[in-house]
Length: 553
Image (cartoon, rainbow, N blue to C red; front, side, top):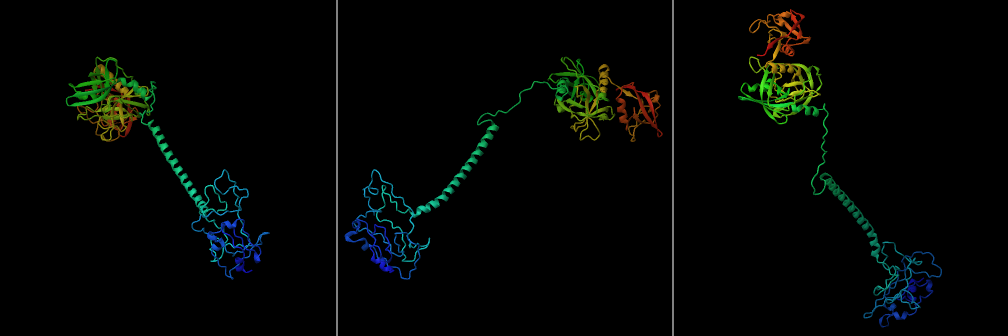
């Protein structure tokens, strides 16, 4: 087929019609629809004359094979030129081209506004006719190769009441949807992230506000703290509080002044007549011309006088007059005390009246000596003491040591402080858990003698001891200070004790020094019988004697 002739011989398509290709071998002419002449160009120029002539493809242009055409349809020449749109002549308004044959019923679907307009035909995808050459996607066709495509109509675009079902959508629309999806997803992700942040922030703020309300009880309100209601129930009698409640009314604080000396100590009421028991070293600064003031637990004060005192036992009895409502403390039995028993110490350490401390009995029959500040040793006291770890400090001296039944079992007298190197005493050091109390059995006897006679008697064995002896036991001296070492007719002389004998045991209890022997003797009453183990010439023997009595000077 002569392609050049086929393109020139057939009737040329008009600008308002859809061009059809000439049939093969020049058969079949393209017919123009009725009324074609009314769309001629200006000044009698037809659309064919106004179109530019498209040169034919070269003879060697490649051709492609196409599938068979549908029945009754002429093959389309892929190289036939496509008629470009015709430009309206200057000075004339171009009318929009009709897209199909006129409506024989005269309905105006594409005219001016009407009361109604039927739905336009549905546009369906059109399969290119057989023989139509389509370039590959994204490849620009070879210059001069015709590409059949829908030609957009010339003239103004349809108005608001016009609809072109054949108009192609803008190319950007398809791309915009493709770009819009990830953009929406990104926006959605940002919204979700923002919502999560807002939720976290709201939770944090809510938690902080809740914590503030829980802690402060409200915003801007007064703080009210929870508190248990007052309890009126009394404590168990054997508890620390129960013991203190019963004992404190009978404990007093003692203030002493005499010359340049003054001091503070503790005492407790013995009877309703006003007798008060305390330590000798508490009232000793008053001397003969000093003053003693007693302050009771309720705050009442009274003047006191010395009834009697004894430095060897470190005990003294004073008396107040004109005071009613006194509460004497009951006395226990120190021989019944066991190591580990609970005890309560009451006193005025460093003038802090009514101080209560607690502990246990750490040891019994602990031989101690206290005092010794005078050169003649007249102020030395010998005590077979109860040892306790209840805190005892300066000012506690003379105060009661109570058992679990609120009974007095001892009189707090001495402590071993960290700065003390010479043994227990009444120094001003603080407590390190080594406190010593005079057993109440010994204190009771001495107190009765002081109240009744003003003086205390000391049990004696009638021998003088060598206090410089460094061996084990207590050695009888070779001579006494004002006479023989063994008093003629005394308890020791009657038992057969001689100078230079070494006493090693008292009633079977070992003694290691002269001081310990004195402590053991002083723990008994005059007239008590004792068994002494005596060593002489490397041989030991046991002798029995009855304790004598000596008045304190």
